[in-house]
Length: 124
Image 1: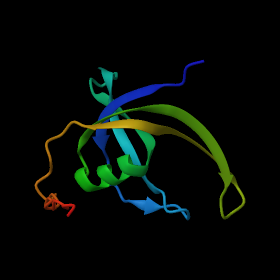
Image 2 (image 1 turned 180 degrees about the vertical axis):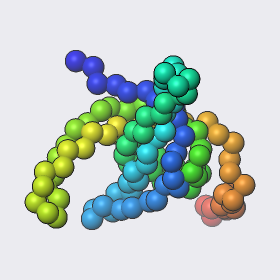
Image 3 (image 1 turned 45 degrees about the vertical axis):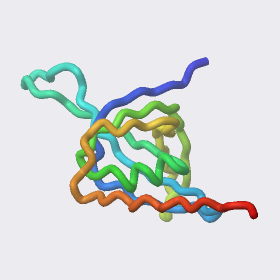
């Protein structure tokens, strides 16, 4: 069996970092992916795909990407369900991201962290 998804698209909003109760970093983003053909009006249609990114990849995405950034992802398709506050069953299909590539230029409002100077520890 194969469950592999590869997408290239734009982020629809700024990613926000959250932590699980165990402290694991996670962010959920929506990727706007244009279809490769035109509809009957001559316009391209767009699919909006929910993606979940975990751990260091989530931290890096939140630090270096903003709304409109082009990213490439690979991952697996996952379906789950839960009962909402009204007691209605909600079904969710999403891509669980395994790798992400930042394909846009770095945004101007991202300030890189200064490099820490390494100090040599001598043995006497």
